[in-house]
Amino acid sequence: MLAGAVLAMAAQDVAPWLFAAGALAFTAMQLQQRYEGDNFTIQRLRRIMLLSDVLLIAVAALMFADKGNPFGLEHLTWVNYVHNNWVVLLLIAAVLQLYTVMRIDSELKKEKTNA
Image (cartoon, rainbow, N blue to C red):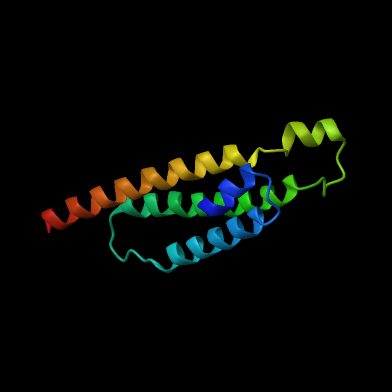
């Protein structure tokens, strides 16, 4: 994903493909992780993490849309609502991932010491 995001800044045509492959692999990896406990906080954090995975896939879709105007929008509308807005979604997804990873780790340690 990092290579795809960096190459997108350099306007390389392969960037959306790299990012999409990374986002799909990352999402698949996180979907395979399970939490079988009953801690509501960890369950909520897992749902937030899955939301950020969906956002990463949306980033890949916006990167593909950024290469042209596939929606047939007027140029000004396309520039305002689509062009390079994948960066904002990427930032939101990254912040959510960072938050959930830190909080889940903290909650699992707390759960382990209480058991």
